[in-house]
Length: 365
Image (cartoon, rainbow, N blue to C red; front, side, top):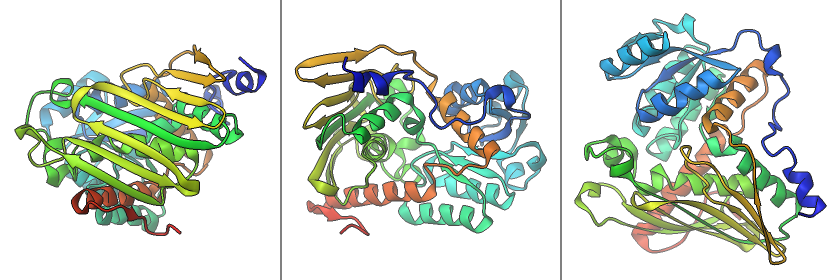
């Protein structure tokens, strides 16, 4: 391993954003968790608990049984969604984490903003670009901070990837390839009525649910936004009749850099991101899933180096960043405006899939 690479990979899991030591935290940020699906129960709540900067104090969901079970298990207060919207427990939390189906994000974020609470909202931001713009506007009008849950951006593997690209270690980036797939009905449950298969609730299928991971991670790694997109979607099985089962899309970035991405909700599990430059290839494999260790490899001059590093709890990192920045008063990245760029890109990819034509994104030269 040459010195340049060693410098960037030394202390791989460092939090380059952290200025406040955990031992110096007084009272952590109290978080209300809105939505108790499998991700919130199995990953978000443990992540909040593991973070020195946050604690969960209130939970709510339309499933009263889930609320009762989680409240008892974690010794937090459980309330109904209507009670949350009415602000019945607003004095018991400082911030709100929204992890409900996409098309319901807006109503809960609006309620949180009206209560003057900071917000961490899951991605995609909403089911349509218009609703996403309304969500961001609600936080802007209330002057409350909004962070969007792009957990890859606080993952050390993605941050070291960005460091190496920014340093010029890989030379000029030529192209990027990414894939993300899963057998959704097997991995997330076999109920065909789950909300991800409802286009009104989800806004789309494979592209909306997992296509956003390569899209946003590539934007983050390159430090640039796509100027033109194209895409193709297809659906083969009845369970996915209302949404896209598979999607392939191309992102064109400034300087002619192309990113080619493929995602599927009904294919063998895969998760990979590869950046090819004139001087090196940088590989994350596995890349995107919270439930598998990330892998990081560098290929340069015919030599491959697989970096051995201590894995982190990806959601702990995200909530640590969220709580830390609230306590220190530092602005969030990614914020609502950042997320709106993804919403515009996803919408354009769907339009391209319908028309067969590439689309230039708004604001692109």
